[in-house]
Length: 38
Picture (tube, rainbow, N blue to C red):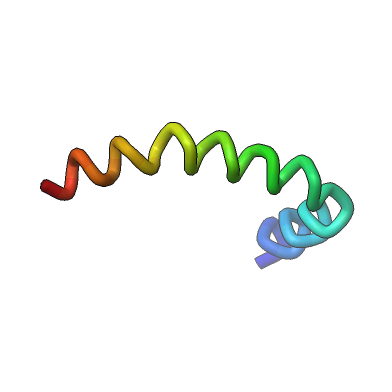
């Protein structure tokens, strides 16, 4: 649970970085998930 709290604190201080990472993962993984779900 301590690790979870640390991760939350880190994401709170770097929301822009997290958003950027999420955009990259979604743009790359989105089509892959769609293809895999067929």
